[in-house]
Image 1 (tube, rainbow, N blue to C red):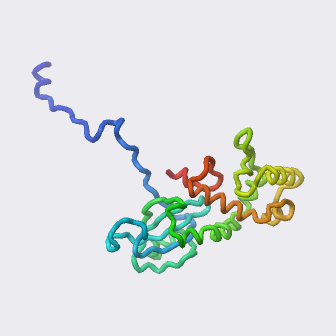
Image 2 (cartoon, rainbow, N blue to C red):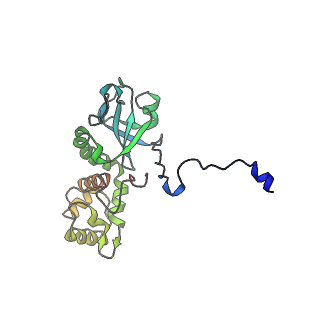
Image 3 (cartoon, rainbow, N blue to C red):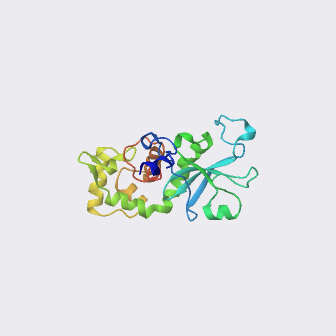
Length: 216
C-alpha cells in the first residue's frame, strides 16, 4: 500500500475553498412570449457608465408585463426603435430590433427619460390587466396582524382601507370605475402604478405585483 500511495498524484482543489466562493449571479433573460414596452433607447450606451463612449454597448431600457420587471437589452446601434413601442420579445428578436438581455435593473438605474415615462406607461398598461387587479382589491387579506395588503398601496391609509373592505363586503368590485364610484379612491390605477414603482425601487418589504425580487 505504501508503494502504491507513493506514486499517486496529489489532489488539487480548483478555485477557492467552498466557504469563500461567491454565489453565482443568475443569468437574466426575458421569455420570448413576454410582452414588453420600450422606455428609453441608448444607442451610445448608458450615460452614467464609466467607459469611453466607443466601448459602450448600445442598449434600451424596457419594462415587461404582466410581471413588471425592468431590463436593459442589447440593441444594434442603428436599431429602429421608438419610445413606448410595445410587443412580444420574440417579435422584437425576429425583426432584429432587440438582442440578448444585458441585465435586470431597478428603478434607480433608469435614465431620466425612462423615469418620466414609467408611471404613465404603467397606468395605461394596468388597464389591460384590470380583472387581475380587481381581484386584488376584492380578495386581498392581512399580511400581518397589524398590516393589511390594501394599506401597502400609496395613499391608502387606515380610513381608506376600512372603506374598501366595507364596500367589497356589500358587493364585490367589478371595475376600476366601480372602486372610484363607491369609495374615495379616485384613481386606483395611479395607486397601483406608484406601488409597482416602489417595488422596482426596492423600497419595500413585501412585493405585491412586481416579480423583480423573485427573478434574482
